[in-house]
Amino acid sequence: MSDTMKAAVFEGEGKIVLKQVPIPKIKDDFDVLLKVEAASICGTDCQILKTPPGHPATPGAILGHEYVGRVLETGKAVSHLKPGDRVAVDPNLTCGLCPYCRMAMPNMCENMTTLGIYIDGGFAEYNLAPAKALHKIPADLSTDLAIFAEPLSCVVNGATKAKLMAGESVVVLGAGPIGLYYTALMKAGGAGKVIVSEVNAQRADMARKMGADIIVNTEKDSLKDVVMAETGIGADLVIDAVGCLMTEATSICRRGARVLLFGMNSSACCECVQYEITRYELSIIGTFISNHSFPAVIRLLKGGKLPLEKLITHRLKLDDILDGIEIMKRGEGIEIIVAP
Image 1 (tube, rainbow, N blue to C red):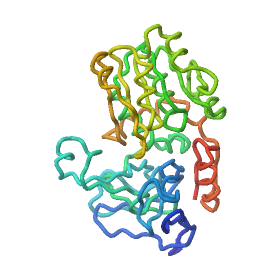
Image 2 (cartoon, rainbow, N blue to C red):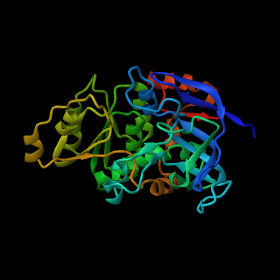
Image 3 (cartoon, rainbow, N blue to C red):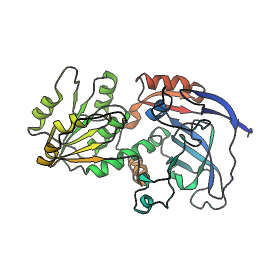
Image 4 (tube, rainbow, N blue to C red):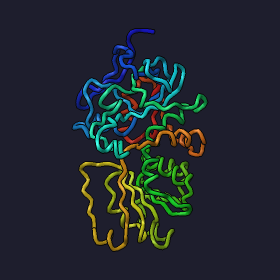
């Protein structure tokens, strides 16, 4: 094995550079050296590379926080993994000691850091990760499915809070990758009708493949009119996968409904009529990243109930990662897989 590897390194505002860097070595008893099988480009990567940035990252860090790999070597204290094992990576590293970690809310950790954002991640040939971040995946689980483990773990965390009941009507606002994962999960979870709001034709087509019953192009039709026509009283559950649509979400609910807010936009300021939330007993639920969701997600992926492979629009080599990021920025890709 060579002493160096190719990696996509964040070098400051709007700049990512493909370069040769040293292959990491085991330093800690709980370190695990991985051969990266594949990584995927996330919207967060595009936010990091905006000018000005829409998300912070550490200059000099290798990006890529959605990835799977194969164990090459382990530190002497690692007992649950051995060379040859395949793993999905939970990139959010928590301290386990702050008040939130001890309240079983690690996704609120006061000292969290993230592989592929603040420390080296998966846009590389090799990666060094702590054992606690790694979840063993079946040898026969395809990389095409395993690559969805990280984003799907965040979606499952939100879905758990939403408490879908069999037969309920669900509206998903936005058919970007997250909205599409929610569409597939809600349909597989027993939703009676899934309505998706999306103006982009490619994403609307993907929503149909994920099981959406109705697609509404809000540039042509009134979402509220469609929801009321289909449900009679409004949706049981509305999911904002965009990050700025709470006003729209609450306007299409039935009384006593739930609104799940997943998408994030720090500059969004939505109007909120508190009277209506109180009067109609609406539940507004926020959800952020994953919370002990990986084991369930790996079982879910293994079960084959979610047709997520259909979301893969591009397969690229690491050499072409800059092209992939531009494709994602233009909104022309859904799941872009990068192989070393």
